[in-house]
Image (tube, rainbow, N blue to C red; front, top):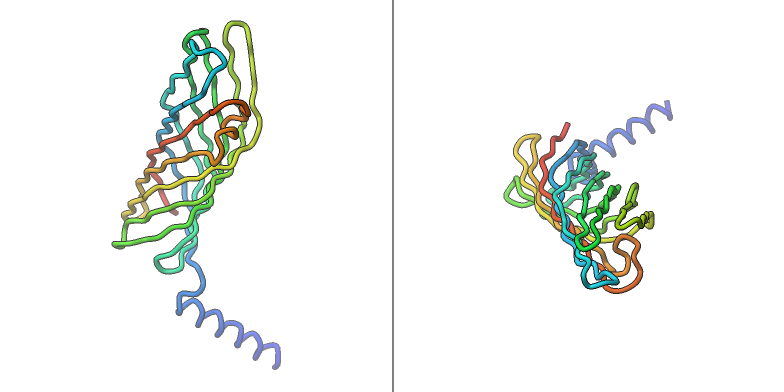
Length: 189
């Protein structure tokens, strides 16, 4: 009898919490889109220039919301390539990003998002004039963006950057900056 009463009280507690909006609503989905990276890498030689190409990204997205506030964890894989002018080479950049963003919804279908991004370089390598290199150092950055959602579909725009110049791609000398602008579409299940 005591077990049934305790179970009834627990169920009543969670039902009250859920109706009061204290328990988060959870959603999961997928997203993909365009990844444009701009570079400001100070090369050792002034005649070397990194030109960005448009790449792509794809991954999983989650959302925990309490009314108009929420948390957005994502797991995003992105791939891009830089042409290196002056030495005739290229650099490929594949990375796994884990953004954990705070979210504020307004007007019922719009949301702004901001927060830290943890990045692991999965395959970053390049070659130029017989030289090859690889960068595997993880970085911490930031992301800020917006999303518009209608039904289960979402369209997003986001800017990503690094907190420290020296953390970008693991290069620790000079002032190196890489920023990313992403346009994507997503679907929530």
